[in-house]
Length: 75
Image (cartoon, rainbow, N blue to C red):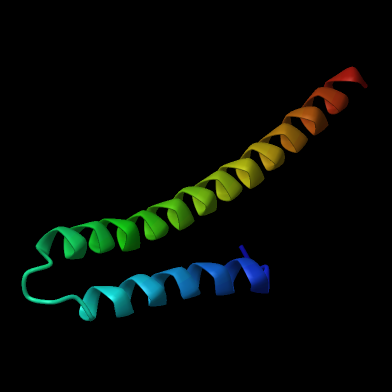
């Protein structure tokens, strides 16, 4: 998540969708809805990746703690 290219990519997508959304005409309701959905999907993907990384970090820590606990029981 801290990778500058990854962060820039997400921000560029959000910017593209926002600019496109504001540049639609009055009769382009379908286009606006699709752009709004696309913008929100980027945020959901970003949040999902954060959750996966956080969960993975938590799982790694829990596994390390479990292994330490098992090692201490052997002696």
